[in-house]
Image (cartoon, rainbow, N blue to C red; front, top):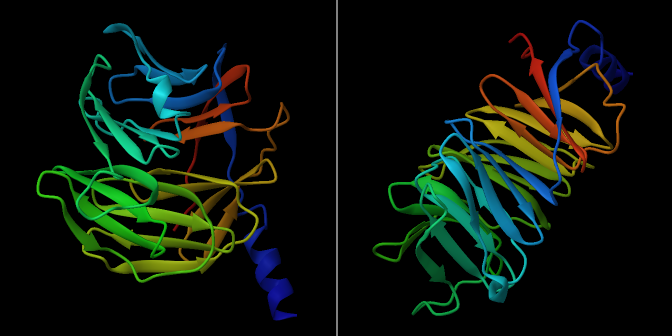
Length: 257
């Protein structure tokens, strides 16, 4: 009975949030990455990274590295492209010119990683596949700092900013800060993607969206009635949803605290 009451409480319309569609546009891409702080759009098509906007149109490609696993655009002057098959990170400038790359196979201490995102100050958030731990990697000094205890389960998604990192596995969501403190750990099953803006976090489950807070899941009332959501981005002003053909821009009211 208690579990039923909790479920009803969390899914009551009082908590439900509404999406307001403000724009939609056609986009031919394999994956929508997002918009940077200067409103340039990033996407991949045929394993090529594209950037378009007022600055111009730019591309980056290196087919020898295999498929692009992830792209972090939190700093448009230092875009982080991760190639999981080759265990390699490539850093790009604001015109998608290569600045440098790190092949983790060639390090004095070999690292097998399944995720890499920007932590700022010449650091990366990396997920060590062998130890099942989140680490901070200082790529100028090659210094590694363990940011989490080992935990079980397959890593589904890693999103971060310069202060903290969210990690989603099949059963658990964890939030860890720059100092290695576990901010929260929630049981969370069935989610396929997460998207974050600072400490605001959205989750995708069975084509439905939820605000994710510590110990609380707030459903978003609107059902996305188009094709299944392929990619999403949450910014300070908008929520972007991509279904493989059309990019939708929504405003979204955050849940009350």
